[in-house]
Image 1 (cartoon, rainbow, N blue to C red):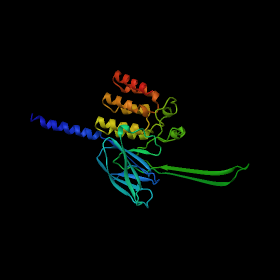
Image 2 (image 1 turned 90 degrees about the horizontal axis):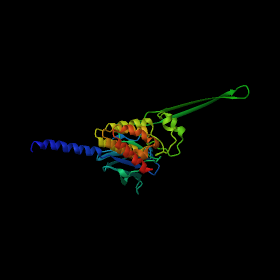
Image 3 (image 1 turned 180 degrees about the vertical axis):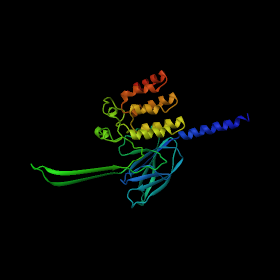
Image 4 (image 1 turned 60 degrees about the vertical axis):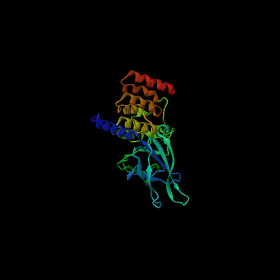
Length: 303
């Protein structure tokens, strides 16, 4: 019996590590005072640009050093230690207290399982990063020069437009509302192939699919986790805060080794999927017919 104790201790430590890895939480920081701010956690910039409503997902440490830096340089930065509860979304508000001093105060907490899909176009969602995000800036310059008239009275007008955008390793929430112009989506540099978006005419489970760039970063974040439970937790957070295409759901499913986790994620992601009539494409990701049957029953129960 004595010889078994070291092995028992190792197994216990591994189980504890697995549980800790799985305890992912969200942090929401917002202000109603219309003062944009940049959010810093543990000295790392989490939001690429000053904003008024930010959600950070994938937090698994018990506490973080938070800094709020206002876009208005006349306002003093706020430093605060936030204590993170496991498997919850904690919301903090940035506001003035009775003395006119800017502070950060806890507003509420919501269990992760009860967090609804983030279809708020006023909120950007980012996965927690330990690498600084670059600010994204767009500069547009238009010059018009009139040089006279051509025969017939036509005027000569020269216009030049230059648009530059720095790269940003951010994880934006891609929701811009149910009535977002499709042409705007297809004009993006990181758009999907046209058939993925415009050719689908069936019912939709969410407003607007993630861009390819954002999805690739999400996929990398999921795959970076060693434990299957951690992968599943982060995958759910990403799905619940965004909008996926069926082929993206399938790509995430392939990251799981266990059939049960593939099935669980496929069920969870259904209501966060754009082209839900294409959900049959997920069948190839399963090894057993029973999983396909169970997913089909779940879909029928949702209709």
